[in-house]
Amino acid sequence: MSAMEELEKIAIRHAQEAVVLDREGKKESAILAYQKAIECLLRIIQTYPNHDLNRIYAQRADIYRTRIRVLQDVWVSGSSKQTNANYEGLTATQTSEQSTFDELILKNPPDVKWTDIAGLEDAKKAIQQAIVYPALRPDLFPLGWPKGILLFGPPGCGKTLLAAAVANEIKATFITVDAASIMSKWLGEAERNVARLFNTARKASLKAPAIIFIDELDSLMGIHRLEVSGETRVRNQFLKEMDGIIDKKNPIHVYVIGSTNKPWTLDTPFIRRFQKRIYVPPPGFKERLEMFKLYTGYLKMSTDVDLEKLASLTDGFSGSDIMDVCQSVQLKVNSELFESGKAETGGDPRKIHMQDFLEILGKRKPSFSKDSLVAFENWFENFKAL
Ligand code: ATP
Image (tube, rainbow, N blue to C red; front, side, top):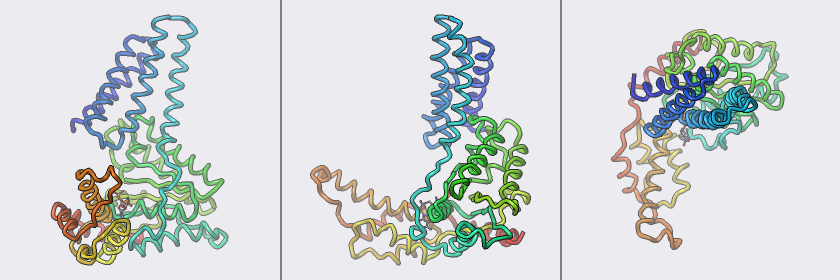
């Protein structure tokens, strides 16, 4: 167990203890336990600033602080009216659990158009056929249409972009959630979160098509460190919800797009619910060139920059890597401007040269090798016609 997992476990223990003490009316001890939970949560946030659950932890810490204030008030005055705040406080915690969940599921897709996505023509076409056509003319699909779509492939190659672009095209409500958050004990029972997710989508679909985008879908399958028990229940709940959506007699416009970098960790019942499985491969030479054109289009470039050369030097880079390279070059010339003191007086950065790109590239390694991609191709071969 890592140091962070250890801290998470301690925080959960203190929080659970605090709630029990609180319910029993042992206010003094409850306050102490809430304080310990807050300390652990803040330590996690400070020590691991990029941890994906930090938002939840910060909200939890706030809820416990509020609860402490309520308890301290009761404790000092001890009036019966304020003692009732105990129950109100607990209800507030539960309500805030629901709103924390709602906050986590973003409902406006990022502003991405198909033309913002370089390459991936096969994936774009498959998504058009599976989602856009049925959404536009459901009357042409008496046999139903695929509602579960699995996007798989190496990280940073456009899975999220594709989901956002299709949501924009059909003006769908975009409900996005990462599976790790669903599984988080901090949001309550993971099983209930799965039900909430689908309920939200069903309700939203009365007005417009709804797309549930689940990042890191594989986390729903596996044992998560914060799930104390019941992984099977979560999995079964998910399968049950998927069946409700997939049902051919149900003309509902809810689509579930699952994204994963580890498709091989999904089991067969899970995979079967995603009737459409789409490989989102890393960019080839042509796509990398397209991306360099796309991103350098925003920058002031010198004529010596050879984009074709850059595309051939970046074999094994993901779309996200190429974006990072272009951003780093931008940062380089802007930093020079700021350090020269000319930024404050309205000066412009100098043009970007090939040498700037070469310097940045000299410090980076490709994200994947040809060998590391074989696993995706093999998996696709086995499961494309399941
Ligand atoms: P992960 O599996 O890690 O969630 P992902 O496959 O969902 O990654 P995205 O989030 O879609 O990857 O891409 C990350 C960033 O990389 C995008 O915001 C974009 O800047 C860039 N990018 C990736 N693929 C492309 C592409 N095909 N065209 C243009 N930009 C791309």
